[in-house]
Image 1 (cartoon, rainbow, N blue to C red):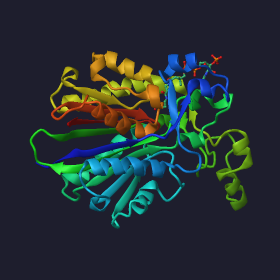
Image 2: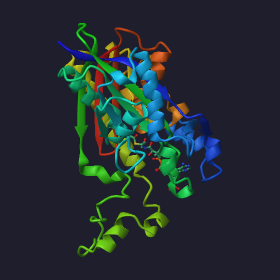
Image 3: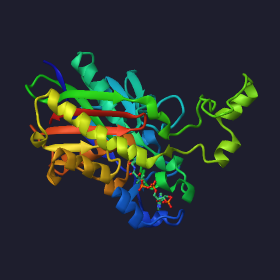
Amino acid sequence: MIRSRIAGIGMYVPEQVVTNQDLTQYMDTSDEWIQERTGIKERRFAHRTQETTTTMGVEAAKMAIARAGITAQDIDFIVFATLSPDYYFPGCGVLVQRSLRMKEIGALDVRNQCSGFIYALSVADQFIRGGMYKNVLVIGSEKHSFGLDFSTRGRNVSVIFGDGAGAVVLQPTQEAGVGILSTHLHSDGESAEILAMYNPGTHANHWLEQPLAAFDTAEVGEMFMSHAMIDNAQNFPFMDGPAVFKKAVVKFPEVIMEALDVNGYKPSDLKMLIPHQANLRIAQFVQQKLGLSDDQVYNNIQKYGNTTAASVPLALCEAWQEGRVKPGDLVCLAAFGSGFTWASALLKW
Ligand code: ACO
């Protein structure tokens, strides 16, 4: 039986550290409020002009490729997860292909926000299991700092997010019990608008009381991107934090248990749970609900904030670098986020 295994893993975080105290220069917030509600102490912000979501992804990819013992020209397929792409289109995958001078391989972008990396991993896993590809590069990268409202108006969202990237190379293995055992993907679009960035978009505010009356090209252009939108901060992410919290603490344990049940394991069998670094309070709630010890859950949100699609590979990479994930260990990756979407992957390292 062919399974895919992580043959190489890499990460990249920008140099610039931004502490909670630093944020108080721009908005009415405090280190105490942020730490108490989220566990975050600091995050990294990319260089304003020299770093992008793609360049950070490329750095993480180079490390993953080198650790897999291959070259960029050996990669057969790219899956790139992000909610903060360099361009509205084309996606970041093709920019990675160009930057690393790869062959004319397929490049796919995944738009599943916080669950993006696990969705991307599951796509790569299927291509490997099906025998189509031998070396698939999966990247999660975000440059949030470029699209957040740093005034007091946006403080409930902007204190949470940070920049960074993580990447893995997946390869086939026939070794018994090794590699990705299963992946589990879910969505419920009922609450799509409670954690979302509405603009620019083609929705034309159709859910408002007075949507556009008729087709008028000038007006439609205005609806896509307008001065009023910017004045009203509608070009920034919106989040109903408490509603997200309530759903996350139900769906995280559910999708982790699904992965364990399908493979005949229990929470106590887990060597490491790598939860999407949404909020330390969410991770602690999940830990408690599953009866896991501190040693069984990896958190690095304290240093990096919530890096959305980058958070799972960033945490997995650091856990591996610290020797907390070793060959034979049972590891669960899990995420929940905008959409809502949620997902898990169970693997034997
Ligand atoms: N600094 C100081 N005060 C703040 C800040 C801030 N950065 N942000 C909000 N406040 C204030 C609010 O204005 C409000 O004041 P009021 O009572 O005078 O109106 C008060 O703090 C409480 O606001 P809430 O939004 O109710 O704060 P809550 O206790 O729910 O904490 C938080 C907010 C941390 C976002 C929380 O809801 C949460 O963790 N939600 C989960 C969402 C999450 O983790 N999202 C991450 C992205 S999605 C994902 O990755 C899954």
